[in-house]
Image (cartoon, rainbow, N blue to C red):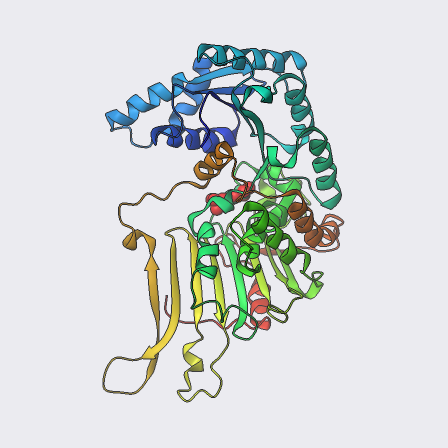
Length: 483
Ligand code: BG6
């Protein structure tokens, strides 16, 4: 790994994302020794006029999770001292010039030449300001690469609202930065069990011959939250559940479940395969979509009274290739449901010529629970222990908490920020991948935006609209028992 002076700039430093995700991830990296005080300085940049101390106070509460630990409190104090705040607008040269000056001061204080540090810009900002911020960084704050180091920018979703706007954004940013300098974060790619998918699929002989249309009946990729839009109604209403969760988080998981084996683990090889599988997705059919909106969603004062925005969606994707033809991939996401869970359910076909009449017990199903409590379990039919020859459904169970006691599973953002510092783009979305993802959903999204597709109302705390369960059944999913 590269060493030397490192300058991390968090733009949008006083916002929600920075407070809740970016700074806590940086603090955890610091505590584990990945950000060394002899090398690193962190700069917060935002419009609000506050002092260094005020920013530190604003984020302090989000950082220490064990206030009784003297070590952690000491780490916290030292970490906060590394943070400096600069206020300025997102399109003012003056602001970015003073930011550059601060970075240079840091470089000089570390006995480095001005412009020689590794400069990481984290845009914890709405995409509407990405182009102007990128222009300003390019104009005022670039590292001088002939002195070593680099400049990288990290951007968050939503990258646009549809194919056209996403391409426009990509083109504008692409004129300023090369693809290897751009890190498009999708934090689902930083989750332990998402990162495990490639290993699971390609390092286990067991799965290789089974992972196809001959053996798998259907696949579900599900995201549920047991709370509503809570204070984010204004943002959410503009985007809706498909843009917020399905087009990015679930589709990334879908890629890793469905793609072919990459040539190697090189980021470009992996991303090539993801693009291919996305390009093999057929147009979405109306009868394979169910949209919902929870009752009470429009009571949020920032949500328009007649909002048509879905807070729930089930969408079935079909892949037109040799491996998957005929296998429905059911992507489902919803807010204000009965539980918080994200999981992948791979359901196998019935056993041909069944002599046990065990269909009523259910099928083999392989479940990968991404959160909470990471786990993988395989539903199997076994003999009911005892004197009778009867069958029962049971599980081969790998629960991470039990199996890996004492191992801390890193937060997604922590891993991904470390990847950006190390220059590893494996878990980041490439431009053509993003384009292919928008191509899949844009026609449906336009129809929803035009009011042609209305969401069905559902009770908060429920499973979502009944119609979604009916669609699941039509797609071939068989409810299994146990677990
Ligand atoms: C974000 C969405 O990207 O992911 C939120 O904007 C959602 O609406 C969140 O709540 C879920 O992330 P996680 O890691 O809690 O599943």
